[in-house]
Image (tube, helix red, strand yellow):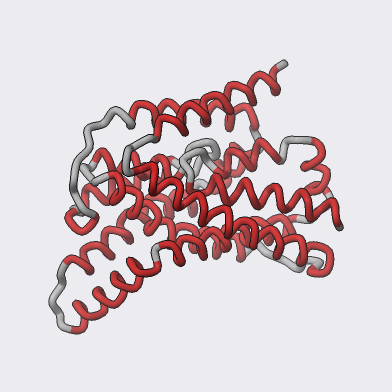
Length: 276
C-alpha cells in the first residue's frame, strides 16, 4: 500500500497544480499514466476504483474553487435569490444565467462525445500534440489587448463563446482554464475577471462530470484504495488552492505565455520520448 500511496500522492500533486494552471491536468495525467511504474498501479485497479480515484481528485479541486471564491459565490447566490424573490432581475441573475449558458456546450460534448474523449486519452501522442497546440494558443492570446469588461457586463453571446472554448478543452492536452480565460479575453473581459468567470463556471462542469462518472461507479475495495485516495485528495486540495492563487496573481500582468512555453516543451518532449 505504501507504494500506491506514493503514486497516488504524485498524481494528486499533478492534478492539483495542473487543474487550474493553464497546462491541462487531463493531458499531464494521461501522459503520466503511460509511464510503466504508474501504469502498473492502475493496471491492478478495476474500472470502479479508477473512476472513484478520478472523481475524488476532481472533488478536491472543486472544494478548492469554492473556498477560494467563497465570498463571490455567496454574493452571487444571495444576490440572485434576492432578485428572483423581488422579481427584479439584475446583474446577479444575469451573471448566474451566463454561467449556466457557458456550461451548456461542455455538457453536451460530455453527454454525446464522451467515448471520443476517452479514446483520445488512450493516445499519448495525440495528447502531446494537443499540449503543443495549447501552448501556441496561450502565447498568441498573451498579445491580446487588455480590456476592462466585468463578468456582470457580459451578454449571452459572450458567455456562449466562452462555453465553446470550454467544450474544446474537454480534449486532454487542451487546458480548460487556459481556453476559457482566452475566450474571456476575446469577449473583452478584464484578465482577472476572465479568470474569475473561468473558475466559477468550472463548478457546475466539474460537479456534472463527477456525477456522470459516479453513474458508472461500481463496488470498490475501500480498505485497499480508500486511504491512498483520501491522502491524495488532501494533497490535491492544497496544490489546487496554491495554483489558483498563483494564476490569479499572474493574470494581473497577463503572463500566460510562460505557461504556453511550458506546454509546448512538455508536448515536444513527450513526442520525442514516445517516438524515439
